[in-house]
Length: 215
Length: 258
Image (tube, rainbow over all chains, first blue to last red; front, side, top):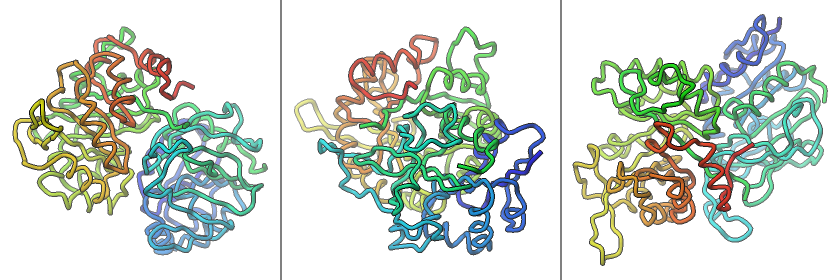
């Protein structure tokens, strides 16, 4: 019996995240959708999703008074960031003429660019939308039973550039290679959407609900 | 490249029942949206699109329940189209578990609606559906006009201008249907698709006219589409999604098959 808190700060559809966690969690586990900082701090594990623009996300985090509890939880409890829930962990995003983010990790979130192309000069669409491969570049309990290079569902126009190379747990190629998963201690965060990534995604969420929070 | 081209089956739903659905032998009730969705998911569909063709707006709630039921057990992206006219319609569908909504007529009558929707919910969930019909003659360079009401009403709007406008207004994706080809099974209008795909930044889904697997591959290779949507060729068990993927892979198209 454990409580899994999905942080709801009004950014995007969280129904699928909750649905997917309910499918993989034990029947006795409680999956709660919450905006309450105290509930976030009390939960056994935290899922931090998010969609939309970085500026809106940061504003919403502060409006709900969640900044401190997210920062604390991200350092203490098994913590899973998804999509914007990954990007806002970094210092700064280029989105919305520059947005200061939570700054838990050093790095930048950058725009793919309107003239984005692959190595052979073929135009690449932005947003990067659809199923792409995630190459696992460090072994991690959250990759358990997921084949290296499995495809996950992505939808984003900004990507992560972290300073510490040892933070990167997975990379994906879209014109160039970017960090699609990061991991440190009790925290794991993904650019893609495990809740929309069929079997591989459900396996990752299953790994998360059973994770002891150690790398 | 490592981003896969997507295959998206489209299911027409009338008052909560799939009316143009699959005829899988394993399915007990061919009209059940959840059974159809589950089956397509098992076969490797990359996304699912549900088109609500319910005539009466009083029955829209039924679609909300369909989305809720499907989203509880099928974990791939779900798009819902049909009758999306207000921000409240979008919110309801997203809350029910849809990942994207497709806006068609409402965008034509009020382009600002697309901007407002993208601003409110994010471009990632706003698909603009475009019904285009060729208005140029055989000898002229291609020109396509936007039509509404199932291809019956011309709007005078040029398709290439329109899709760029929708891109600028915040559409996250364009669902492009050729009204000349829709239902014909003679293949997508690849010239139209290619021109649209070249002028927008966002992904383009080709729709209207797919009658066999070669058509799907052509939509990607000639039409430069990022995804192909098909209804009838997957219905009645004519082709399986898995066959379509194997066919496309054999032609050098990257697909999700793992």
